[in-house]
Length: 132
Ligand SMILES: [Zn+2]
Image 1 (cartoon, protein in one colour):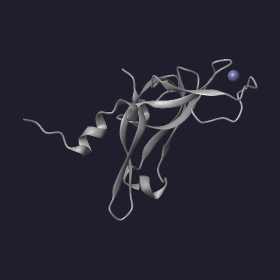
Image 2 (cartoon, rainbow, N blue to C red; image 1 turned 90 degrees about the horizontal axis):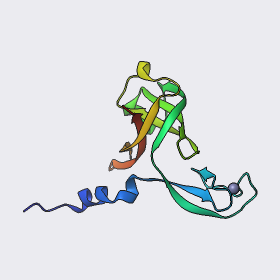
Image 3 (cartoon, helix red, strand yellow; image 1 turned 90 degrees about the vertical axis):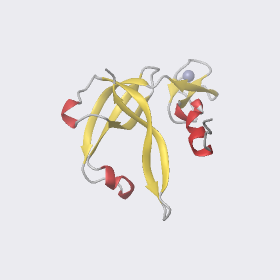
Image 4 (spheres, protein in one colour; image 1 turned 180 degrees about the vertical axis):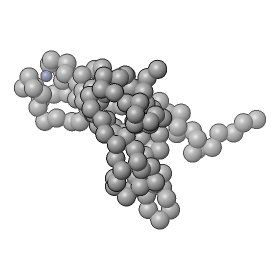
């Protein structure tokens, strides 16, 4: 019988894979980062989840990034417009820099972000890949 370890189990919690954001309760605008006030002047937001689908607005290749990303260098970073209307910056994985183009569709994937501390604790989060 297969016994699932606690380390593997948390990977199955769907909330950990989702990109959460903030939806204005008045006009419906979505924001990735929490805002004090919406562009419509409303101060009240509800939690929402993004589909993870978006398009590349701009991109670049990082050759010398922060030390925690050193083992991943060089890597690609893009500004992405999510289909729900918010804009985020994220790493693009599983492709070469030459394959990236403004306007290409991308989708969120759950990946290792970096290791930290003496024990090498692994931090996970959202990155993006080209949508086929
Ligand atoms: Zn609003």
